[in-house]
Image (tube, rainbow, N blue to C red; front, side):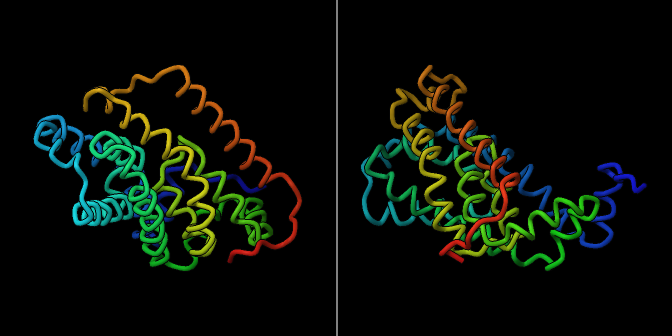
Length: 241
C-alpha cells in the first residue's frame, strides 16, 4: 500500500521538478505579511503627512488605484490591509476605486500564476490522486469554489490567486465570482478603516462584537460552500468560463 510522503519530502520533490512553483508558493505565503508589517510601520511614522490625501481627486484616485493593483496583484500586501488603509485615508468616496483595484489585482495575480508550468497542479497533488480526480470532475463548477474561497476572511487573496491559476478556473470566473465573493470581506475591512478615529485604531487588532459576528458568519458560509463543492455530485455547467 502506497504511503504519502512527508510534507518536506514532497516540497523537495516539487523543487527538484519545478523550483519556480515552490518559489511562488512561498512568495504568496510569506511576502504579503512582510509587506504589511513594513508598510504598516512606515504609515505609523508618517500618517500625519498622509492625511492630505483625504481630499481625494481624480488624478490621485487613479494613481492610488494603480498602486493597489500593483501591490495586491504582485502579492506584496494583503487586500485586507489595503482596504483598511483606504477606508481610513479616503473614506467612502474611495470604495469604488478599492473594488476596481482588487478586481484588476485578481487578474494580475491569476495571469502571473498562469506563467508556471502546466503540470504544476498535478505535481502538487501527486500524492493525492483522489483529490486530483475530484478537481478534474468539478472543472465546470469552479465559479462556486472561487466565490466561497473569496468570501472567506481567512484565506489569503494572494494564495487563492495562485490556486485559481493552477486550477485553470478561467479569468472570467476569477473576475466575476471573485468580485462578488470579495465584496463582503472588503466592505468589512474598509468600514473598519473608515470608522476608525486614528491610524493606530484602524490598524489595531481590536474589533467590535458586530465585526466578530460578521467574520464568523463569513467563515461559516465559506466553510459550508467549500465543503459542499467537494462533497456534492457534479451538476450542470456554468455560464462563465
